Amino acid sequence: MARLIGIRRLEQPGRAPAQRVAEHDVTFREVSKVYDETVALDRVDLEVRRGEFLSLLGPSGCGKTTSLKLVAGFERPTSGDVLIAGEAAVDVPPHRRDVNTVFQSYALFPHLTVVDNVAYGLKQRGVSRRERRLLAQQALELVDLRGREHHRPAQLSGGQQQRVALARALVLRPRVLLLDEPLGALDHKLRQAMQIELRRIHDEVGITFVFVTHDQGEAIAMSDRVAVMNNGRIEQLDDPQRIYDVPATPFVAEFVGDMNVLEGLRTAADRVQLDDGTLLHVGRVLDEAPAGGRVRVGVRPEHTLVVQDEGSGRRGRLEAVMVVGHELQLVVVMEDGTKVVSRQSRTDTAVGEALEPGTRVWLEIAPGAAVVLGPAQPAQADAAPLAAAAPSPARNPQRKEKTA
Image 1 (cartoon, one colour):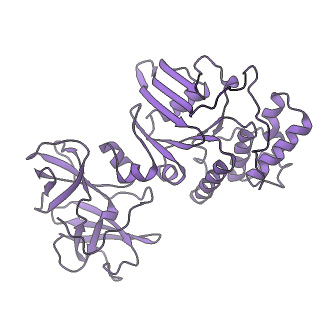
Image 2 (cartoon, rainbow, N blue to C red; image 1 turned 120 degrees about the horizontal axis):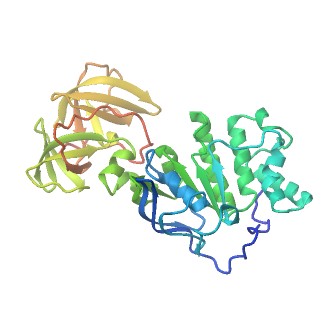
């Protein structure tokens, strides 16, 4: 496999080579961006470590793409400072920044061959024909496109076109590579394959990747760290495991992964009594609510266990059984009408092979698995079944774990 590590660094025209190695390749200091009356970013502080794979994750309109544009130089902050490799970048035009971008749309030249597409940026920088051909060939080997050099983009699949776009960005050896939802146009299976490839390529070249996505599965699978954004702010910046297991805010808890949301009365600091009388032992409190008040409680599907033998859990009726890979997803309707989603291994002997909709079951919640999300809203609806989302890093609770 070709590596780009032996190639001389291609400095931006008009920019002197960096005299020191900065600890952070991208820094935001109190950065805000306002469009008319819309606040896209609200006093954001961010430090992207040199050589890391960082994902900006959040729903549409949260500010992640705006952040990428500010790094690339396509937008100017309303206030605050943007630094690249420790140097102020706000007044540096895009073509002079040591940054390159891969877009969802690929943006390939249809009339050029693959190798000429990859070499285009080198040509603009005045690199000799012989050298740019050599560098383009090495970049194509890096993304596993050897033998496709003389094809046109229209002769390639979507995944292959995305690899060409990636090679074209990497061949310039930028300090920071920005990826703006680059896998959004690919089908599910190809997206998964490209996730593996992107991570491999990142580890090969050692360039800082800043990846924008609304797909939590992508962010968790590929990143060294994830910045979860909401309403123009970063709610949590952490490694993927902690983002999932130890969410810092109610938004992060509900946005990343699946969450059953229940309601009850907070009877003590670490106890919540659900409406059917079940007493839950609370592990963490994400938003304070007074004792004696009604609260929203979150429980991950993998922290619940459905059994057919009567136990100390909540009694309900099985509404649906779905096979999700090696797991079963079970939807249980409790006696008070609340629907709860449970996920557990298909090899778990506690779940019978003959479970069918309509079966009476008991739902056990692992002690300490519940988190208080905050005060209940007036007329809050009961939780509905959730769609499959990010893969769960957590293990299924054992059958011996009973509801506290």
